[in-house]
Image (cartoon, rainbow, N blue to C red; front, side, top):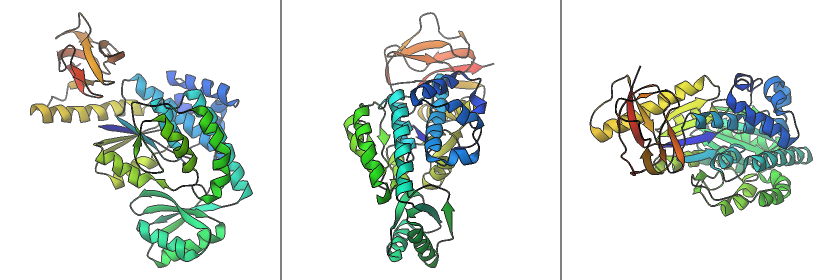
Length: 390
């Protein structure tokens, strides 16, 4: 079972849009620029590191970049059973599942970034990563500081972020070292995100979230606030509001996904931070997709997982030249008339439908046989057919 994860602020990189300029998915950037009233393409391609550090630029570019990657992944027929996003990435996850429309997502992310930027100016704060100390002990360090400092992110075992006033973070950092932390790293941010210092931003954003009216989704999104999967749109009005001033429970979210049966974690967007966290937290396979060159790698990675799945079901292994086509959705499968055993298949050939969704082959070769039968009810990513590649 596959989960898509989406990165948050801090994963942005100068020039991260350049590899995508000739890809069909780049059209999303023009749409985002129109909705945001900003030149998103210039930010993705030409902005330097200092310009991208601005919260208003970092969040918008990371959000759009991740959706470009998602669109490209969707074009090759790969979908997920669950989604989750770290902080800002939660908005990407909701847009990915259709709980937020693309335009609403752009407007909300822009409003969120502006509100957080303003809150950081009004009540200056900072953040630091504490490495090599248990979660509980990091909380103890914050309590011992006796100042405005809190746990902001539970990222992975031995990796917790604290945030608050500069003095509070300094004090808690010193106590964390005394308690055995291997290292404390100051983060270059413009505010104490996911703490009570963001209360003003939360209040400012609440109306915008309500106006977006999140919808129900078939694919659940695991929330940063409670580390539980949600598919009801009504849940997100309060969850997104609470997220700004609550700690990001990312480690707990990853464990929830694993408990739900997720075995594969694909990070879509710039950087590769979340893949590292998943590797440290779960026993699942991980991959990071950031450029068009990564798409072939993803196909091979997904195919390897599906091959192992069929081998377990059928008690045999497919040869290295054989590839599986998997379902893009859940529903009733119907094959295309005229395509059967021995038919030559090109990349992108539609070999059937699952409900309204087209089943397209990501490979070229000879169709050996259908695994799913006509009118069989299949699940997302269930093997549909196998072919021998050229």
